[in-house]
Amino acid sequence: MSTVVLIGTQWGDEGKGKVTDFLAERADMIVRYQGGNNAGHTVVVDDQVYKLHLIPSGILYQNKMCVIGSGVVIDPAVLINELKSLEARGIDTANLKISQRAHVIFPYHQRLDQAEEKSKGNNKIGTTCRGIGPAYMDKAARVGIRMIDLIDQDEFAPLLERNVANANRVLTRVYDNENVDYNTVLESYRGYAEILRKYVDDISVIVNKAINEGKSILCEGAQGTLLDLDHGTYPYVTSSHPTAGAACLGAGIGPAKIDRVIGVAKAYTTRVGEGPFPTELKDETGAYIQERGGEIGTTTGRPRRCGWFDGVMGRYAVRINGLHCLAVTKLDVLSGLEKVKICTSYNYRGDILDEFPASLKVLNECVPVYEEFSGWREDITSAKKLEDLPVNARRYLDRVSELAGAPIALIGVGSKRSQTILTAEL
Ligand code: GDP
Ligand code: IMO
Ligand code: MG
Image (tube, rainbow, N blue to C red; front, top):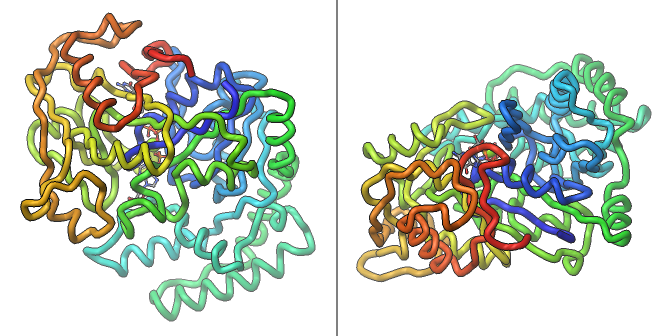
């Protein structure tokens, strides 16, 4: 492994945490490059379950440098809780570095997120209400507060005072909401600054130095391609860029430094929150997948909507991210279904669409064109190599790979580290 970017190819929750954890064994450094604590990455090691929101999934190994990059928005209270709970479980967090340039989430961001969602009524996005969108809005509006500002005792208070005043104007006048108290926020965030100060650094210097020394870097994406602000199902997206290009920005490295891009895809599709989902199953098969896959949101506890694998989306993700290969997870969940289906294209008013449309109006009217496959009954959770999989499961994977246009390098057959089949060198 050299410098590898790992991204989600669907609407998030593809199993990026598990695959990152699996690949992190060979990496020297793991970098989270965008998103915030809207992410929930579950890693299962032996009988221990870890749910990570901000800290890279590589933290579970000793002696791996873990970096939170400049593209991430950080809720310091959540980060400190995550650090404390890992430490309480015997995980060493001394190797964490946080970008000076990462933006900070404040309580008024969460309040604004909730108020905006409420005001949208039936058109709500179904955000995680963690303040992610409003924090990125401040960043783009050039009024955000970065980690370097948070830990600066002189700079911080006036910036916060200005932002609280602005946020309060919107909260009270636009949303008929209550004020956020400046002094309470100032006091608590000064406390957070003292705890986090020792981790804050110039991460671009650190990451580039590691690359120049020949170290292996693994960039861990959050969310998924179809939640990307540019390339996702806008406006039902997140406010950052989960796609591979953002790894350069968030890690502070040039595009030529990236050697490989891996896309994580579930063997089916899920989505949390609102927005179009052409292959969604609102029947007993959807319920079967939801139940067997334990498809409940890691961050918000909301049930995930489930549907068939979408080859149009797979192809789109390969193109947008320049994927070298796919990691297909949760194949074990499909065991026991008599028939399994893959969407190969969309039928829009009689026309066949092979490419993912930008218009939600079109997407909402798209009817998936399916290929049907015979399923497999076998429990595959102990499979160690490709040959251990039933022939129907292999046939299914071959078609997924063919439709997406990328080889499959890794297959997940269970949530544990050991339940992973490597089919190509990564
Ligand atoms: P992420 O956000 O992409 O990291 O994914 P999540 O952690 O939110 O959701 C994926 C869920 O599937 C987690 O509960 C994982 O433990 C679990 N998981 C990952 N890979 C597999 C797999 O191959 N099989 C099964 N059964 N579960 C898996
Ligand atoms: P991981 O990294 C799944 C979804 C929300 C909502 C939309 C916008 O675990 O894959 P936001 O709070 O970001 O403004 O919400 O994006 N969403 C996710 N869905 N997995 C995630 O992260 C998500 N992060 C955000 O449900 O639809
Ligand atoms: Mg998740």
